[in-house]
Length: 116
Image (cartoon, rainbow, N blue to C red):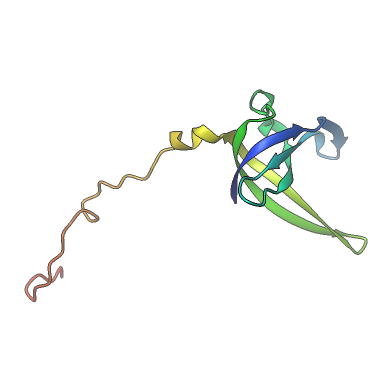
């Protein structure tokens, strides 16, 4: 999933050690635009944390996954970002090539124009 939102708050960096080694997690609060803006807490894990782009007030394009898990009969939901970039950077991604011959052909209706 993808979301464009304004970064409103950067929460303190969390670190620790687990059975797979050291880990770090950065939680951020973003606010959506529109008539009824929503605030969302998004977690960024490990090497995806880029403090330089996490400036309050910045508009961000966030690609994320939503995951829920059960623990002791209660359900917990996480929003985990897997890519964060400034909102203006979306145009820098490569666009599909629309110049292939098939999509630019003009087809006419005629009995002797069968392609096979």
